[in-house]
Amino acid sequence: MTDSIGVENLDGKKVILHKLDPKDNYYSIGRRYNVKPGDIIKFNNNAPLKIGGIIKVPTDRSFLESTKPAPIKSAKQANTPATPQQTKADTQPSQAPANTGLASQQYKVSAGETLYAIAKRFNSSVEELTKLNNLTNTTLTPGQIIQVKPSSTEVSSATEAPRPVAKRDSTSYVSSIDSAERRINTNRYGLFEKTEKGVATWIDDTSLDPNKKLVLHRTAPIGTVIKITNPMTGRTTFAKVVGRLNDSASTKDVILVMTKNVAESIGALDKRIHVNISYGTPDNE
Image (tube, rainbow, N blue to C red; front, side, top):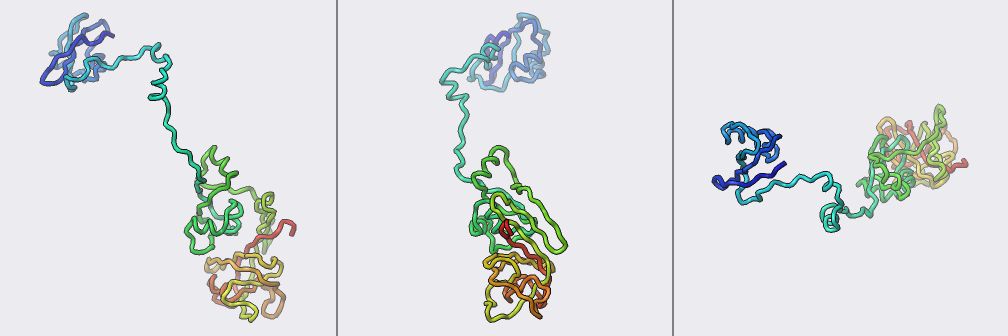
């Protein structure tokens, strides 16, 4: 298409002088110079267009601007490789700084999970998760969303496709009426999470410090930390096993004996209450 042959100054605005060719019309000219066809028609009093004739195109651009419109690249020009200077200045993408830290991600707590178990899963610690989530205690509730920092092995797959919520490993279940054992990532940790439901009682025993969260259990190894939930209040706490539970008149048919501190933490109103407990046991038990 023939370029404009000149310009005129109209009150400081540029008026382009365009020489008509066979394919020109008011609409193609308007598209070429980015001017409304109606403005061109009005400016030229709707004069008929003749090949080789000159038509004036009014614009709002300053007369001091460059006269020629930006050239249209041919297919050959478009495919011509850029010069080294152009490649560096125009085609080289900017590089974002590398993320050297491990970004935290969300994790949904399942029934029976403890902060300790989640920390083990992500090669972290209870203290780190508590600080990361601004927790005032280690109590978790099913469905709660917490922030975790995955280990380097977990991140390698996450970088391929972002995951808003961390997925849990597959688990197998063995159900019964009063208890169930769920295998938790056995290949990595060699642990079962054992859950039980039943009656618990609290006692004032001089051998147990009532101000500490201590419990007696029939089979859990001494030193095991047990998660204890009162289903009536929904309150949960953690206590340490310090001895074996033997049958007596006060402990008949109970699964757990607690100190008064534990009972108060879960809102126990009676001496004997129903509880749900869970704790980790070795794979070979």
